[in-house]
Image (cartoon, rainbow, N blue to C red; front, side):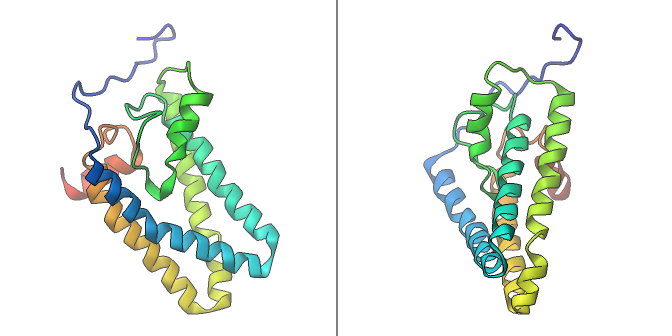
Length: 177
């Protein structure tokens, strides 16, 4: 326990060591997401540069909130196969929250804000994609779904933070592992 009686998170003694195969596959799994993100950014840029600023700001804000949720993670400051390429969150966390220890309330707030911001960022370009051509929207949805399909079963189940991470807990329940 910490001084304020908040439980300190304790992880498994054996932390999964990401292999070079894991790392290569992670970067391959990000390709559909990056194509969707860059494509949506280009479509938004046609409508207004302000839309691009909002879209990218939402993504960055999601990374900052996720950095707060990374406190206590055994991969913080190291290689972390994070969904939607929020890989930099763990590095941001090791800089901004260097001396902070895990507290469940802080984690919950940041994890919820990160999840909400990510969902808003993913939904944000839908109107403009559809207005530019329904096929852009279909392509966007297919690419995001492909990223999720490649990501969840290949990384969440191996991750030693999946007992804490909302996405990891959901995947474990869905796949009953």
